[in-house]
Image 1 (cartoon, rainbow, N blue to C red):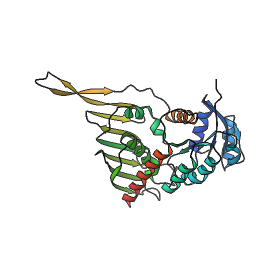
Image 2 (image 1 turned 30 degrees about the vertical axis):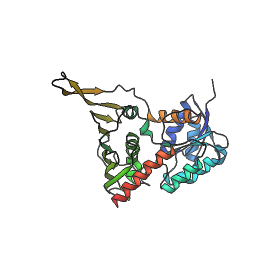
Image 3 (image 1 turned 90 degrees about the vertical axis):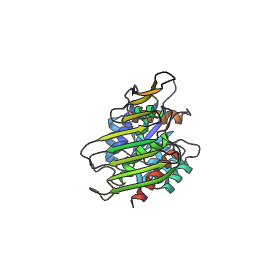
Image 4 (image 1 turned 135 degrees about the vertical axis):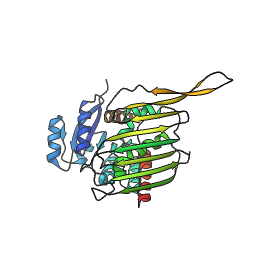
Length: 310
């Protein structure tokens, strides 16, 4: 049996803790250690999961093959490029970077190495079932609503929440984005807390996307209208169901009727699937994950929405 991929985690906040928890469990991973500039945070985490606390990021990078980077978005490019330059594969949390220029720096530094972006919702089994339907939608409606928390207030809700769905939309329809209309306002923070965007792709597909971090309820849903079917995806329930047109009758009097569709899905933790794919990619396997180019494309779409809001 081959040894697990030697891997470390830089950044021990909420997402970093989840990465450490899962990497400590995965047989495919050998969790070498963690690093955080706040040693009081990282020391307790290292002790809890029986791994090593490193005194510097460079020291950690010298002993691993790959790193998960879970630090504030504004630090992604500087820290990510430093790690890539040390020769490690990198999984950086979403968004890939604050700006397209910084995303390009990461992509350039990743030459010959795996650069994955942590769009965890892409690994939701229901999303992958939707992607496997085989045809692009004509119209999509997305709602992602959350209650207010002080987390991730360094970025607008477009980069915090909506970007999940922008990346998935572009996986569903890879044609260029041709038109963006958007509105958004700040309510409880100094940045945009609620936004609504209408996106039109070159294929003709239109998507209405809403994201809010000031909602009284939590909603995570996507509704896709395809050529011959309607599908409703619930991210939280990991379900995909809907209706499709089914021809009935003979050749002389063709008719259609709506028949229910329910796609069987095995519930799984998306973050675990994301890490498994990242490890497999580092080992050279041909697997589906969000690479640097795809992460940059989602970021570009998010920036177009923010520009439209202004």
